[in-house]
Length: 114
Image (tube, rainbow, N blue to C red; front, side):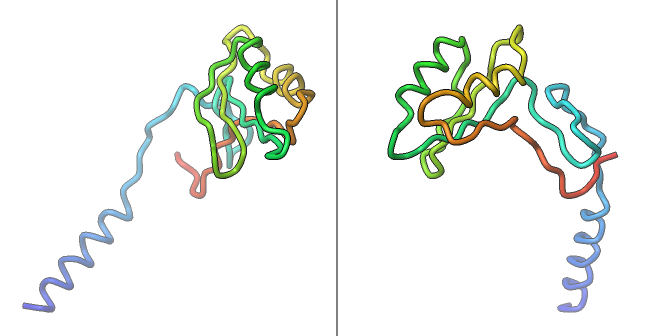
């Protein structure tokens, strides 16, 4: 009985590990074969001592939307308007007082999806 349960569990695990998906996400922009980034999305890291008051003001002025406020790493994720250039926005926010860095919202895949 014990061997049957162990064998059944093993077969289920093997079967599940061989499953793949061909699902695609239209909001992804290909950077390379290993990673993508979310269209019009930036992650902005700011200095904890300076705070994010000026940054939040600039986000509003730019017409961007705050998607997430990372409280544990002093960062925010934003979506810029569709008519904005992601590289120009990245450069614009990098000049805001208190901002440490600005990066595209990259998605790194551990396994290549076909």
